[in-house]
Image (tube, rainbow, N blue to C red; front, side, top):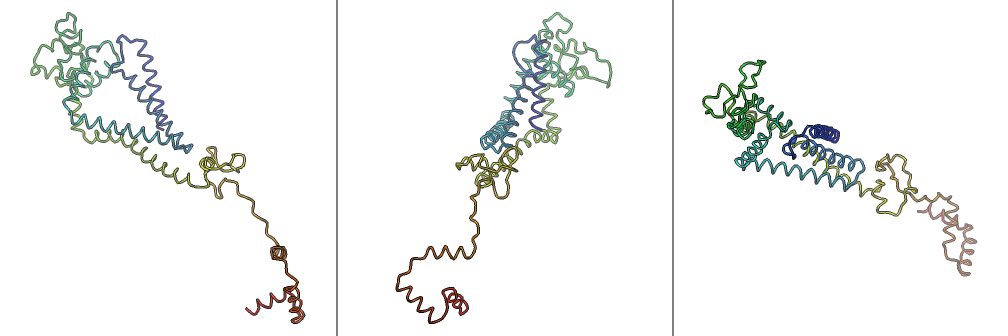
Length: 328
C-alpha cells in the first residue's frame, strides 16, 4: 500500500507540475506544491519498493538500506519538530519571511495563491505575521494606483453570514488603518499565529496527525528489525537455498527445488540440499561374511585347536556362539 500511495502522489505531482509549467509566470520553484508532491512521492515510492523487494527476496542489503533510510527520515523529522519547538521565534521568522515572499508573487503563482486563500478562509487570518504583510505586493501597497491599492484580498474579509455573496473589494483601503478599527471588516491576525493557536486548541488532532506520520515509519523500522533477525536465523539453517548455496559448492541443477516458491526461499522439511544415497540394508549372512573377511587369517595351530574343540564338543563354530549366548 505504501508504494502505491507514493506512486499516486508522484503521478499527481508530475501532472500538477506539467500544468504549472504551461501557465507559469513566476520563475523558480519557490513554494511550488507540485515540486513538494514530486519529491514526497519519489521518496515514498523508492523507499517502499526497496523494502518490498528486500522482504520478498530475503535480501539483507536491501532490507538494511530500507531500515537505514527509515531511521534517517524519522530522525530528521524528530530533529525538525524539536528545533521548531526550541527555536520558536526563529521558526516563526522563517515562516514569516517565506510567506511574505509568496505574498509578493501572489498573483503570479496560482498554486501559492490557492493555498494562501484556503488558509486565510479556514483559519480566519490575513497575511503571515499580520494583515499589513500585504503591503509588499505590488498591487496592494498603498502607493499603487489600482483598485486593490492599500487593501487586502477578499479572503481576509470577515464573513458575517454563511453563503452570502462575497464583495471582492471588501478589503479596500484597510492597510493604512489601525487594527482596532478593522475587526468587523477583515481578520487582522496573521496566519502563523492563527495556525499555532488552532494547534494549541486542538491538541488531540495535532497529536493524531503527528502519530499518523510517525507511527507507520516506526512500525516499518520495527518490522524490518524483526525480519532482519529472522533472516539471520534462516541463513544459519540448512533448509534455505539462497543462503546455503553461497556457502557450499552446490549448483541449482543438483537440488530438488519443488516447493521452494518463485523466490527460491520457502522452507521445506528435509531441506533442498542433495542428500547422499544411503547404503542398502544387508542380510545377516552378508554381514557375517563381511565380518569373516575382516578377520585375520588363522594359523595352523589355531586351526588344529578349533578342530580339537569341535571333535570334543561335537559343535561347530556357529553352535558354540549360540550356546554362549544362551548361557549369558
